[in-house]
Length: 252
Image (cartoon, rainbow, N blue to C red; front, side, top):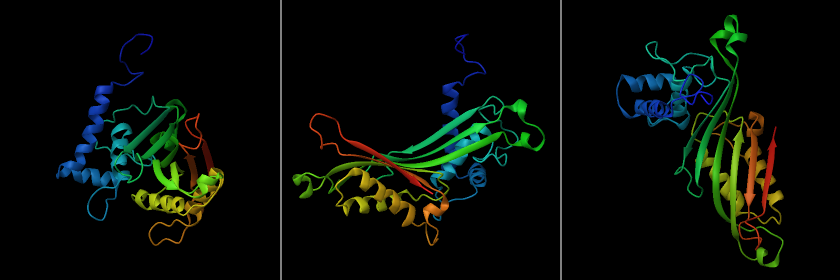
């Protein structure tokens, strides 16, 4: 495409790409046999009949590749072809960002990144699934929470605004748990009396890994294999800089 300055098989037509994605969303808005296909492809809906974010994500992924996210089966009807040619794909990343899904932040996003095998290297049973590996992550963006944090005397007597990003790698949950996850992060920040961002970030990560539960399951997130990344900023702490920033990673 770059050599010939033309849209060809080496790239994608972005107008057609947007139409394909929007067409996938229509499957959930029209009560018809198409919506039944959407439900079948995603396998699961919320208790109220409203699809989870992961269900919408699955449909968009199927529209792109023809297969479910883990590549285990073809989910596109036989009379349709996927927008992308899997034999030409080497990697693909898709993100759904929900800007109004957070009460105190700038949004929530769900991302899947996948690596595909070279079609020439596949043989036999593997040829049915060109996916080599994939990863999913959930991210809470820009939570703004008044927090008691710092070593200076004025910081010990009043709360200041802390901006927090939390990202969960190896995310393996279909349900929309971001409201509960945000609540854990906010409650941890509101009860803070730490002096350093490093200690606070580690505490938040450990609260998620060891104390957070999904529904009635007794399994901890550390046992599920989650990897947690916490990024904290104090925007008003340093007069001649934007903010001090600390990033903490923890997991099994």
